[in-house]
Amino acid sequence: MTTISSNIHHAVKLLKAGGLVAFPTETVYGLGADASNDNAIHKVFQAKNRPFNHPLIVHLAEINQLPDWADTIPAPAFALADAFWPGPLTLILKKKSSVLESLTGGQDTIGLRIPCHPIAQALLQTFRKGIAAPSANQFTHVSPTTAEAVKEELDGKIDLILEGGPCAVGLESTILDLSKDEPIILRPGMITAHALEKVLRTPVFMANQKNHITRAPGHHPLHYAPLTQTTLLETAEIPSFLQTLATHEFPIALITYHDLDTPHHPLIHCIKMPKNAALYAHDLYKTLRLLDHQHFKHIFIEAVPHEAEWDAIRDRISKATGRSFKNFFANL
Ligand code: TXA
Ligand code: MG
Image (cartoon, rainbow, N blue to C red; front, side):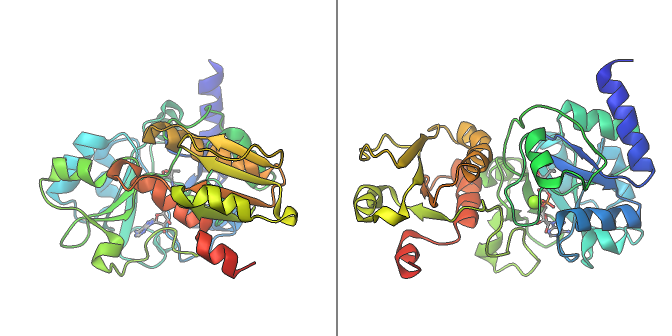
């Protein structure tokens, strides 16, 4: 038996016994529990310190498991499943009445996703049932994209962490609500609105465009946030802003993706991110986590382009920062 398959069998045993197993997906690491075990689901919320009304995504191995969870499966769900599963897309569908209330936070819908990471697939294929898995971090923290990051977040609170290297995508899945009259993105991810529209041949809306009333993900004021105070800066503001910082505000970290003419200052640590959106997404959480360990007084992040392929990154940066440059002064 290879190490991978023996680890998977051990993980499945733990899941069947109601245990918690963190596992890699292509987006971020998930904290897995048997989605049909109320007690195990309870433990997920406790380990994460997450309010019970934030519903969990159920992960499946194959599309033929959808009817076990979803009451109605509209044609667009099959088209999207064909195009993007296994992969970083979560579909919100009307739930079956048998789905546990603890999973859905009392809503009449369920989030479903078939991930493509080989270890997630092996785990789901062997377990043969749905695995409820939020990101494997404390509530409001940055999601983990490595097994070490999961350990930082949840050590001692869970039964096993399956090691699967760094996550290829690096940001959480796109969440698309198909339970309403029109398809609505509740959380942007690296599968863009445009990519979804190409398959659906109908407009896809962002939750905020539609005044959507469903509980959209990450609506806590500081979600996906580093512990260090983090502020967003427009590109043009950066040079003059740096001039205004007083001695006691250093050291700071500055995350940019442009080649900026920033002053050479021993207490300004500049991190140059990739100009390509997929590569930037891959590195973002890893970078924030690393900086969080380095005792900066502040992290500043340069705002990213207003283009569709950057939507998910812009969303996470705005949630990580929670305030803009102007508010930074207001709060000094
Ligand atoms: O990439 C991902 O989606 C990762 C990996 C592990 O699959 N999972 C993840 O789960 O990000 P979580 O729980 O950290 O974020 C899922 C978000 C939550 O904010 C939750 O409120 C929302 O999805 N959600 C889940 N079910 C929902 C539903 N039925 N209606 C509306 N929002 C839902
Ligand atoms: Mg999360």
